[in-house]
Image (tube, rainbow, N blue to C red; front, side, top):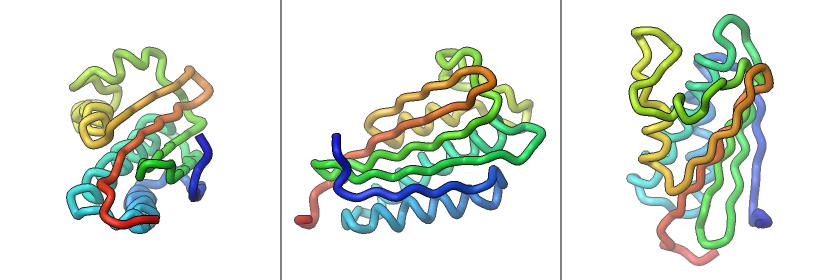
Length: 145
């Protein structure tokens, strides 16, 4: 599906960049005239995806994270968060609520939260090759593009 508009951002897997990514996604989505609730949902989902890349993909090093945003027909925003980190051996297990590899300080709810705040969630991963998270969210039509 061709994008009506798109942007790509690449940044180091530093925790400070989670807020940057969340803000960039919200600014890009502003062209859809979203409600505050829609913006909050988007920011939460992006925050969870980027935090997963920062915390789990690169547990002992700084790596690269790619945030790709695409506006599709029908007021659908597609968000892709990609890393080239350690990968996930069992995606189905990782997507189970409360499952975490991050120790006691992690809740294991990242993928559940992403799924809850978006309309579609797809996760592809391979050990040693990284992870790609693709989320889609349909925004209410308040303005005509």
